[in-house]
Length: 404
Length: 176
Image 1 (tube, each protein chain N blue to C red):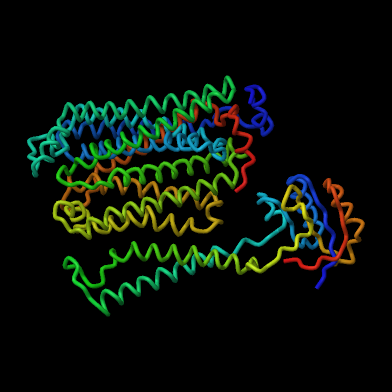
Image 2: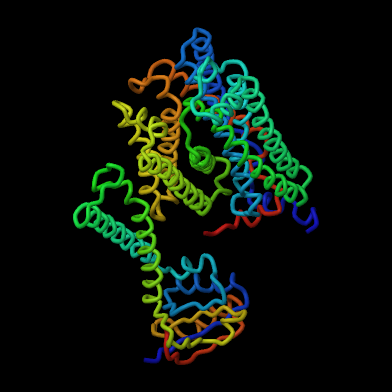
């Protein structure tokens, strides 16, 4: 196919807006940025003052941001790798979500390189159990830990930048060669992501309890990453449908996003249960400690709420066809899934720091505000950085006429 | 019983969808539309009710899951209790994987059986095609001539307007 036969035909016909011009959105983005910055200052103050829960709040926010940004670029990459056309019309939404990645990356690398104080292994921890203990001591040494964190983050950012830059360059130059280049990049990225993200979830989250292990932990984290990323894309799609993308994102696009959200919430449940059941069944003390800490006392209702928010609600709300096509309903479900995501991260990170009961005070609030605020700030900037529709993508026409 | 009908055959899917939509808006009785492959949007153009198969899938899945949980409870807590790792007889988490599989089996098989049943697909059933080319490259819209208020001439006109290649008025033996 020649480049010029593909040029903006569909885009100009449908009267597609070229950029975001909503003044309110800019205001909201700025406000969110200020809130996030204030929350970050509070957390840094807490960390410097030696408050372990401030450290946990920072870890929660930075890991949440990193995974949200990764979800954006992973979504884009899966679409390129599969040669999917349906999602092209709203591809700038997950691309804007990928703009969160550098923010989270800086936050988590600064933790891994400068302040590992929250990890038990960072201060005279003795590992139990022969050869594994030796390997763990080596793997969880501070310089190696920091170097690994920088390496993961660099791999993700380099790939994300390359894919997004190619997609944007296509807007100006046209031509299908950018799409095929991105297809190759996406396949390579998905391979690299699978390995690096698995190790990163072991490093950053699982090593909070260095004697505990679960081999499905990386997959569990991926499930949460992707379902919450889809929830953010759904929210952005519903929001922009009522504005500049009214003629672009149809009910059928929303329907398929709803199916994906439904599927990945169920996938999360599947992996959650797989991890829980094997540990419950085997009943080995070194494995059960994780769940003992998370079902003790007032943690138990949160433990149950996690399953309700991340699976029960989205599953039964989105089971039928109608709700997946109703913007108001699917947006509400997406909000529930995002609250569930926060709770899931909270239950992964906070219990080792507060074994007696779930805390929710200044550090937890600051962590949540830093997470939400920076995400909104970065997404809003990401949306303004490029045209809202990839007008020269050869698959755009197909996407605009998409029927379920 | 034979039904008097008018058949229009089309070369393009856009034409058959547009003709079907126009026929429905005119209040004509659409007997069926035959296409060589699944055409998106045709169900809406024909004004078909949403399929009831999801209900079969959901209810039978629920029944399968319920039956299995009951059976596992009966087998491991009532009929032949076995001590596994000191866990209670009625250990629900242990039942979940099998319950899940049986739910999928019931839901999946019952949906296929219900579909074959409703669609009347039986091995000895002979397909009577209104036009031999619907298995090749033609799209056929079949309209009933029942309403005296709409003259045959206006129906053929409607079909011709949407680029029908062929228009036949005749008796159709069997319309599913």
